[in-house]
Image (cartoon, rainbow, N blue to C red; front, top):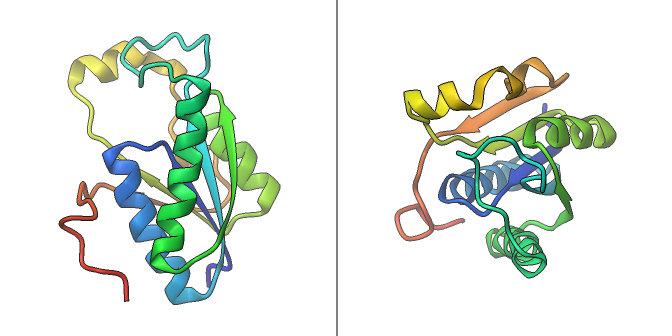
Length: 147
């Protein structure tokens, strides 16, 4: 089924929930896992996107993702990139020949959707593999323990 799974992680609450669900799936399937931490590009034109983060904060996001995966019992190879999430996730998924990409999703307001405009591509339209979007906003305190 899925042998190579990409976990896209940005440190957000939705990203943490997706990482947890993804890591549990990786563990159950015995798949190879990769973690991609994407932070916004310096030249981001979307004022509604996540705020810019410092170098230390970027490294913390990557380390946090790797540590959370390890807590669940999986080992991931990790990479930190800066850029537009859709472009970077697609690029890395192609590079690692992913069978599945797992991302967190936060519902946006009408204003946020309008403001981001057509420059924000829909990830599913760019991937050549399956996509699992986790909308569950559960965190470590409300999620069942990893077994």
